[in-house]
Length: 267
Length: 364
Image (cartoon, chains in turn green, yellow):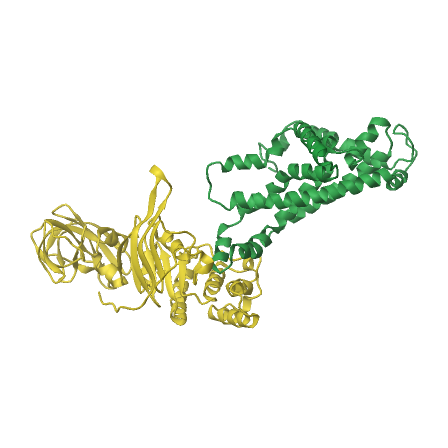
């Protein structure tokens, strides 16, 4: 017998459900990608394949501006949140369990639980006060907001790695005359590196993708790529959006694939 | 005890270690004192949870005592962090650094001490030779076998030339044959390096065959310290006699105590000569221990009499289980020969004679 009796694949309708799910997931994306190569001015017509909208988006100064801002923001937020997450992960795993530790996990993961819209509104209120007091209205607010909600995404892979890492290794380093800093530098950090890279990439993708909080926090003329696209859709649907989304998709796929390979590699 | 007063490497003085707080407080070590000499193979032996690993961790510096002192060559190290103690550890799990090669692992301690590169290189080569791992120096630690990892762990801990080497059940993960090999290897390394070894194990056979001296531990206390011979032949307490080897326990009335000896009158009425454990407080009835191989089964009258209940053949010897007339159980071990059986059968009425130097009076 090829299949086990209770194999879910043997149940009637399994194939149909699977196909339906795949279509629901990938049909819109396939349509988007296909139409990004459409020559026509409108989504309702198909005039043949060209890179017209990619080129047009590339030369659009608003798109350029938003792309650069998105990248600067995502890199800064990912870097800062990964540093914070690494420290938080070390502090919550390299200690004897104590009352309140579980509360701290919850605290660190707060952005996963509080609805984004709530955080967005809260930050809008707080930052607008600070803007009045300080007169500063630069990218710092967005970097701070993105760093905050990226921390749990960077924290999770790093903590998982630390949890599975033998504590005796650090003890052995200390036993062999390594000061706490040297033990971290020569033993913990090299072993943690794949998880830190994974955490960084995850945080990067999350920041790059954010709309809700960015929309609330950004000052005038601080569009990121996603908020620019949203703004474009409000006016008229330009096929340029399709092209940008396709590039976005490609970037995400590359990053997630890299994430997968980095995480899979065992030291 | 035939001991020369050697200089002590480690002096543990009145060390207590308490875990937890309030009502859930547990004393993992209950006021332990012991002196470990220089150049000695010293074993901490006891069942799991007896405090032997806790004591080792306190000496290594992974934990700090709740009270008491730990002296290394006369200096109190109890409050120093592990990286400031000239003491190295071989871990039960080996704890080799997976991102380093065999040679890098061995050189790690010297590297951390800031030794010159040339010295490290020479010392690593020397260590690789000592543990016969020269051919695998460039390998990752995940690419070598368990026994080889064990050797690397040893070399890594010995490379910085520690004053004392701590070994936390390092052989427990190896299979039987490899364990036997490593026991001999460890003895050789200790002899060649002249470093004091403190070895933790729950395996009594390992302790007896390898150690210069053994400390038997139970429930956070050291019950007895002595040579393997002391521990086996002159156990001080019932726990020690029971944990190491097999024992027969008999109740006896003790009289004429003097010079470490006494006369013990058994329930059968026979009186035998016995050695007395240190710290024995005279009392009406005490426990006397007799090892199965130190008693002899006879078909006539002996010091004890009973009925053969069971006979178990072990190849080198035979164990004959006797139910004494006083209803206590007694086992006699008899060396086997090729030509004859043990000479007894189940149900036989037998006598047991106990030699002049066979019995020890326990202090509890």
